[in-house]
Structures are given as C-alpha cells and as structure tokens.
Image 1 (cartoon, one colour):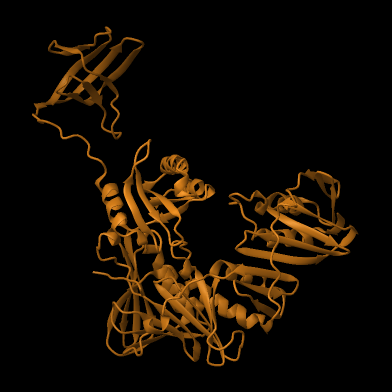
Image 2 (cartoon, chains in turn yellow, cyan):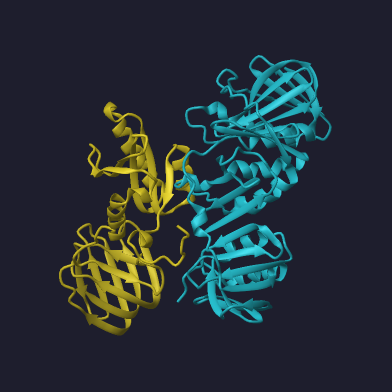
Length: 219
Length: 364
C-alpha cells in the first residue's frame, strides 16, 4: 500500500470529465493497483478513484492512471508532504459477525431466555432456502421459528417470513409461529414483525453470556 | 339502524371502546372495528381484541334499531371532527352515513356477522369503592412488566389476604404491594392474575362512577363502572412467590420529604443518560443524589433527611425510584436498605398498606 499525502489536483476523463481543484489530499495506491483519492472527511468513499486493472504512469509532477476502457485519471502533484509504502500481507477477509453467531449459540442453549417453556428442536434448521437460526417447540407443542439478529431490521423480518413460508410447506409441522429476536429491534422492524403476528424479543447479550448485569433483579 | 346523538357523547364512546379494538387483527380483520347495537334509545358500543373488551351504553335518540360494525379509528376521527351539536348515524345497505352540521360522510361498514360473540359476564358480582380501588391500581400497576416474553409478569395479582384484598405486581426489578383492608372480592385463598394493560384502561374510566362492580368468571373478569363494562381475559399461570422477596428487616432507614425527593430525582435524572443510575449517599442528616454520565457531565443535589443505621451509598434506576416514591401517598417516605446490592423498600410514613420493593443497580 502506497500512501501519498500531497497538494494535488485531479482530472478524470472518460464517460464524463471531472476536475478536483488543488487541495491537500491522501492518495492511496493499493497492492492490486486500485487508486483512490481521499479528502480529510467522510467515512469511506473517495473523491475519485480508479479500480484495477489499470496502469499507473509516474511522470514526476503528475501521474496518469489508465484503465482498459481508456478512461484516465490524471493526478497533478503540486507538493508532496508524505510518501510511504507499507507491506500489508495476506488479508484474512471479513469474518461473520461473531456476536450474532454467539448470540444464536447462547439462545440455542437457553431458549427459555426467548420465551418460558421453549425447547430447542434444532439450531440451523435446514430449509431449501437456507437454515433457520433456531426452531423450537412451545409449551403447547407448536413449532416456533426463530430468527436471531444482532440488530433487528426489516430485512430480518422478511427473512423470517420466507422461512415460515417454507416450513408451512411441511404439513407435519402444523401452524408455525414466528419469533424475531435481536439485541435491539428497530421500530419499523417491530411494527412489521408484529403486523405479521410474530413476537418480538430483545435479549441482553451480556446477560446471556453470564456477565454480571448492572441491573440486579429480584428473581 | 338510525340515531341522533350529541357529538361529544358519541365521540367519547367511540374513543373509549376503540381502545380495545386492535390494529393487529391477524386473521380477524373485523376486530379493527367497533360494534354498534341500537335498541330503542340505548346504543351499545363494543370494542375488543379478544383479550380485552370495552363496552359502553349510551342514551341516544333512536329512530331505527339495528347493528353495524364501523372501522374504529376512522369512525372516531370522523365523529370527533364534526361540528359541535347533533350527529346523525344512518345505516343503509352497504353504507353508513355519518352527518353533523353541513358535513356528511359515507363509510363502508365491516361485516357484522364476522364480529365475535362475546361471552356474558359472570352473574355473581361484588361492589367496591371505585376511588379506593383506583388509587390501589395507580400504586401497583406501574410495577407490572410490559414485556410479553414473560406474560405472568404483565399481570397484577389480586389475592384474598386476611380480611381484605391484596394487589401485587412485579417486573422482576421492582415489586409493588397494596392492601385494601375490608375489601372482600375473592373467596378465601382465591387469587387471579389480571393483565396490567386492562387495569390501565380501567383506571381511565374509573372516574365515571363511585362504585365498581366486579364479576369474576373462570377465565375472565368484568369490571362495571357506570354504563361502561370492561372485560379482560385472566392470565393463567403461577405468580412468583413474592413474599420471599420482601426482607424481614432492614437495618438502615432513611426518612425524607416526598415532594423534594421527587423534584431532586427529576433534576438529577437529566444527567442520568443511557440507563445511568442515580446514586444516593445516605448519611445521618442528609441525602445526596448524584448522577454521572461519562463524557457528558454530572449532577449533584443534597436534601435534608434523617437516617438511622450506617452511612451507605446505593444506586437505583432513577425512573423506578421516582415511580415508587411517586406512588406513595404520604408526605414523607422511608427508604429502608440492607446493603447496596439487596432490595430496598419504599413506604409512606404512617401508611402501612403500600410497599414498593426496588432492586438497586450495581455501581463501581
């Protein structure tokens, strides 16, 4: 990874033309060839960039980056304040949200944290469209499909609906009830879930994993 | 069905019954409606979600008997928006015309045949003082849970106790117990668990009469106040053994004026954000309340108070503490503690019939 902090101006020519006037910016040249020009603000989106594959021609006071479509990014360097290169090595990639997976595991071990009297039928219950986080039975013997999320959003409710529709294809399971479980459920997701007749449960991750809650309980 | 009625009276009736109608109708869309039945000059308005039913009788100028189910929210909005004065409601075929002044609305009714038949309330009835029962509800229902994941805790326990009635509610963080001596509603050792939601609704209509008639069935309870009837399904299950939660004795007792304490909690709470507790530093002649939210700031307030026992710092959820202090109907309150991690008891000085047990919050 090459990191250059420079007072520069940038011109893009291709499907359209764009000009970034002279200012101090961070230019990132990644190992795979991607070039990104960042301002000192914003979380992730560069002001301008060019994906790999491309070729970078360093012509001293300006660089020309060209991709196979003939689009060019010309970076004119007026003053270079810092120029460094770092070896990052192999990236392990983004891991699945550990909290969500652990939450599912903890709830599988203690389904009563979701609802009194629930017993686990299976974790990662297989269906043709993917596994359901938890399938349980309640005290009345009814099958309960449970979707576990770290943050309960509308997507999760839709997912639960799809799973329940799949389970309803198996008549031996009877009427299946849905429960949407998350650490925090967004209001819109709660409205949608409840409108579809699902129970919505917020669980305390720290409490489930046995960490001392600050709020003590009477029982 | 056709009748005329004062706008205010009809609007109030629709709004009251409408609180039991539900937007979450599931397989029974008709539950989003209100049933209106007219017999002579008596109009009966009913709303239900099958768990809670609110029904009330209103005297109107009846012209043609009959029944209809109206969309609850829509009809309530329409009637409330009409100009003051007489409102006429006329049901003809597939149309309900609601008119008042020079305004006229036409609304499609819901299916009367789909509206559930509601069971008649139990015949045995007990009459109790509405104001006293209302005050007891005010003090106790607040401690009931609203978390449907633990349905038992969403109820208020009504139990026969000595020669009276005891009301108990807990959400596992706090417990409220109120005795109504001399109020005989239940048989010896009988107890029922009434949903807190129904009792909250009951509190809203209790001012309508002096006497409350209670009819207890096997699975439901009906409360009648004036011309309003509220029927609720009872919660089945065993209420937690609350008696064992109440400590037999407390070595430390703080006595403080109720209003200044409430005011202080309200002020200090401004700095108790994100579930930050309020700390109470109790010494022999003063009480110091503190709330600290990191990166935001802190609040401190001192109050005159008297305390017996050892000096102690104990922290509480400010909302739960204020709720308990507010519920006490006395000028002074006592806060009895054992240590910073054991339940504390809030009582009114000179009133032994109410107790509010509160779990502290652990602080570093």
